[in-house]
Image (cartoon, rainbow, N blue to C red):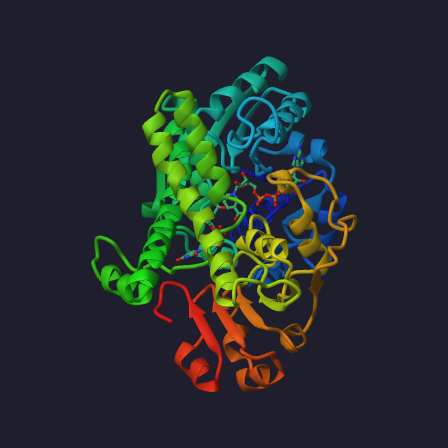
Length: 471
Ligand code: NAD
Ligand code: UGA
């Protein structure tokens, strides 16, 4: 195996390929994208995504055996293994709009692969993007019917399980690497070739091989189950607020049961990110098309509870502040969908900010890694439009009720309330007595991540609302 190409230099393609290049110095790895700015950024000192530890990985491998390029056809035609890591957003129009996965980027990548690969050759095409179960069958048809007949295309499903903010550690020591392939000799030859790449650093016992459909469905199921845990604990947070129970105590108590486990039980203002909602909607749509309405309804509730949680938070803020936030300055601390990333895709901050703006609030947003144009874009973009490539950020119109500032103290100066929407560690270290002194009284804090020391804040004079905790 001498050369790997990856179509799509995004949050998945960039870091995963950088890790393969780092761990497999004898393999040439080229990451490709049609977005010239993105490739230029990957080739610069300022990478297009913020991910702890990624700079070091890229610096070590780039120029040695890791390359970033827009010359897609050249590198795809030369590659032995072609990863496809393009976006698979939710459809915005037509049949399945608002639910089904839009595979148009995937299909156009497949058509391009078919056109530029010449035989005789054995080419392995790897689904890295998250796709509906049975996508490999459709892609195989596109490749077979459009490609050179002397090229044998073998498709594998190798879904990615990394989480943003921890991508480098997740890739360095993954819980498992999943490879799905056909069960015949060609399929197994391809599975072995890809497993051998990962075996450079992942113990063989953690490289799980299975059939194509199980691998495709396992990815959707993993995200659905993770999101379901969050919606479950968030639903209990609502009950805690009514009964005087404390959701952190409930989570701690159930998490010590080894069958339940303690991870992913943090109540929050709601889950966000580019994948949980998109992948569950995709799962719901697949179930519906298979006639499994009850199963579809079951998973749909995970999203309904998430929307409910965001709405509940907005109502708590407005209700707590005497039923109106009209013309009140509110400091929004954190806009990214989680800490340690600058990613704002489907961040819960979007719905929360929109809810507060609708009631007349003046928002002052501070996030250590999110730029002003992204905040304005997210708050004005249509639902599901964010994952369809274009260069929207610079052209996003500025919202008059939203200011994005570079200093948390400026955001809070004169504010009636602080809304903590992302769990950035630096928020815990803020000088709260200073903030309290600068705020309008009564000074409210609505901790949407339960990261602050609520008792200490109350001692200072703040009125503190925490998720799933007594007032
Ligand atoms: P992304 O939008 O950051 O990156 C996708 C890239 O593909 C874009 O830069 C786009 O320009 C490029 N692209 C689209 N069509 C192309 C084509 N024909 N040729 C060349 N480049 C093309 O998306 P992402 O977050 O990296 O996600 C990619 C896939 O991985 C999705 O299916 C997603 O569900 C899945 N996934 C994402 C994560 C995550 O943490 N973001 C984790 C696991 C799986
Ligand atoms: C998630 C999965 O964790 C990855 O395994 C998967 O590969 C990825 O989706 C994907 O397919 O895109 P990611 O969305 O990057 O990763 O981040 P998570 O850590 O899962 O957080 C998702 C959201 O849930 C965030 O908004 C986070 O704040 C929220 N969350 C997480 C909670 O509200 N509570 C928790 O206990 C955990």
